[in-house]
Length: 308
View 1: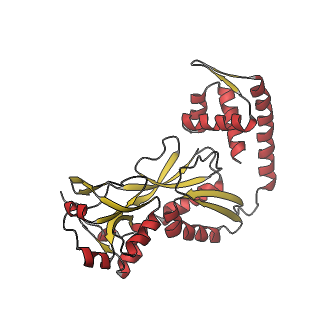
View 2: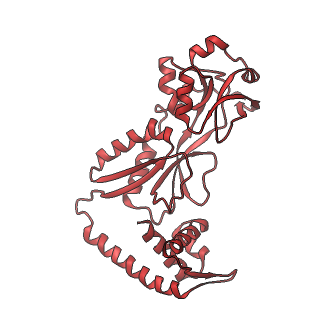
View 3: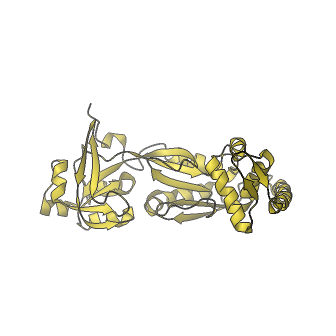
């Protein structure tokens, strides 16, 4: 279906004679339009468009591709009309991606509950820490935790993502409980390999400090650091969607509860509103409703209150 989407984008660009005009009509970023056309050219092994600063024109290969693309899109519309379910049930397969930690803690169970509502759907979940190209990987919906998601994608916020500083009771009993951010310099810290390996940014109301930390163990994935913290390996900054059950049973304890890292958001990302299928739209609405409340991570009352 991603090649069909690329054909749709290419047809709009060829018809409008402009990437920007096609982007406006498709309600898609110009960057994503360029990615779709580039992917189609890569799949076909031919340059389809001649681009200048003032115009976009078809090559010979582009003219052939335009005719075939229009035929393919018309045929696809006929197929959809002929096979559309009379009972309104959602069918087909969706491909979604999210981080391994969020897949483990939340998305796997969410997908199961969604499929119980739509038993004729199939879902392929790609749990990965890498940044996938949604077009090339044929991803319908990406769940990403970020402060600033890819501006080329359409994003919808599912929920805030809060994080806390935690350690096991055994570690704190042996090495002491930090009383201020400055105390972290003398502790063993578990850090993310991709960012925050040597310094942690913490806030308390309007007050903000950057603390240099000593990283004895780093990993590129949150659940690995969680297991290390549970094993007494040190202090870790962890999302509350992972730590909630361990804080509840006492296997982890909050450290410096008045101090928190910068807030992030959990986004659902997709390439275009125009190409959003009924199944993807249904899944998106389901996830928005599911994550609208906070009990799945930490209740608001459990988080430290901001000081003015």
